Image: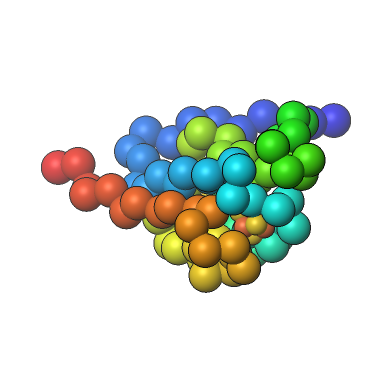
Length: 83
Ligand code: SF4
Ligand code: SF4
């Protein structure tokens, strides 16, 4: 059964995958503590399934950025807390 994730009220970070820079190795997916990255079903122009952000739950920790061997494939932004 697929787990249904509940959206968090206040996003703490966001991550952008540059799909054509990604070789689909999955390191970022394995290392993400929030488990918010998956391999996309589609292919990029190099024929790989790129990593994809589920769209919610990123904390901006940056672990995926440091795990990724491809310079420029991942961009992480830490968001300012909403008061
Ligand atoms: S910044 Fe952290 S929480 Fe966000 S996708 Fe990367 S590893 Fe996961
Ligand atoms: S670690 Fe980098 S190259 Fe590997 S799947 Fe994630 S974004 Fe793509």
